[in-house]
Length: 95
Image (cartoon, rainbow, N blue to C red; front, side, top):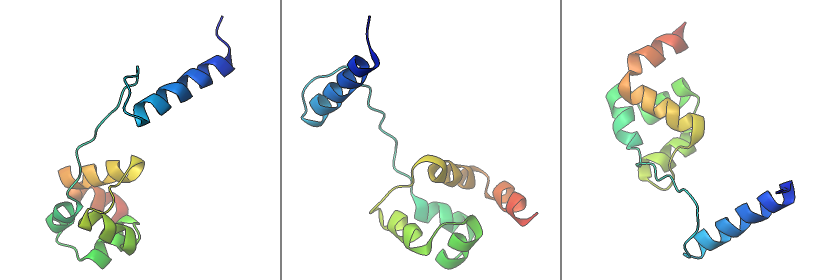
């Protein structure tokens, strides 16, 4: 019977093997990078207005637009929704 410790140990060993480039039974999800600058351009908003409207710091937005960083988690989801239907997001935020 596997213990919690054994499970954690196995996970750590797999992570170490993956990081070292050795084969491991890990699943790696590669997400396509987002073009945040193009998403913002669709809205017609300046960087300052976009950051304020969607609750993102201006510095973070600039990093995303330069490609230094990518949005993750809920921020990534927000950017994808804005890309598909900016009017819906703007409508919800204005009410």
